[in-house]
Length: 110
Image 1 (cartoon, rainbow, N blue to C red):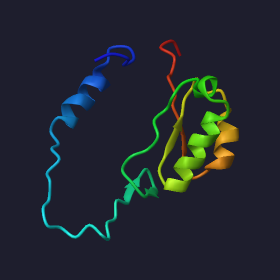
Image 2 (image 1 turned 90 degrees about the vertical axis):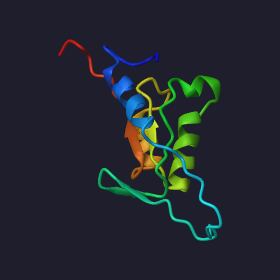
Image 3 (image 1 turned 90 degrees about the horizontal axis):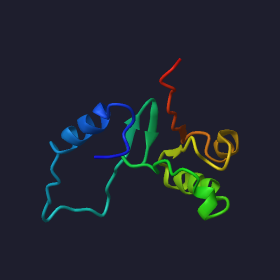
């Protein structure tokens, strides 16, 4: 495991917890009307997934953060803007005010 901050205990913990879950196929189940809604931090989202932060996405595609925010708002899922974003959180929050989150890395030294 790489890319966790400081002692990486949260990364290890998340991996251990994720390993406890198993996807179980369900056969002969009507899937024409499915609902994936999930309550999360006081909001209701249409899926238990969101768009993870991607640092400096705007370098690879100008306006990428705006596009990702629009896609998240349309899909009804959270969009986490990176602390290394090319767009400001204010710009992105205007696009998707109900689903924009911010990835923060607090400094070790307060």
